[in-house]
Image (cartoon, rainbow, N blue to C red; front, side, top):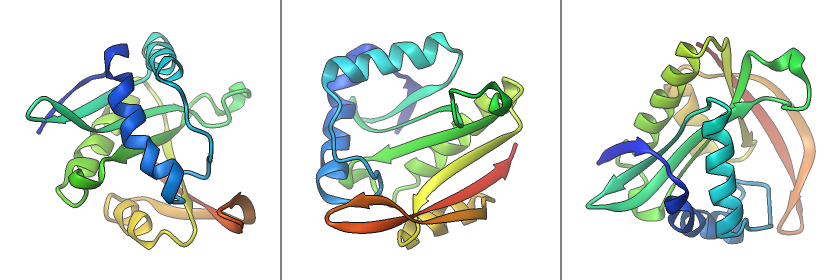
Length: 163
């Protein structure tokens, strides 16, 4: 596996990674897919803001990505607290790639002077909760029934790690 900074040319691969997440899981509460153009714009915007946006490749194929942005980005009072997104293709699950991606963006955020990283997780996603705990994240809050997907209510679990 190789890790590199994403480019807008990775947008189609990232969209393909997110399609089964959007269509079949609560790893993202969203039910709306971004277009390739929207992904390309997001990659460009994050990098222009000084944020990290990395992709993991195996044999030249993008199998995962990680990025972060300011938590509650419309309020500068949170400018030292970041929220991450880490997603892998189904084939890349369980191989340590998510761990490498998350640690890499944590290091980037720390070097940029940020104080903490937040993960917002479906409260029933035990695999993601265990993943975050193994990397030093602690549960800091839960908003019951705050998300809605697949005709059911979802709890938003907030996990935090000080950088």
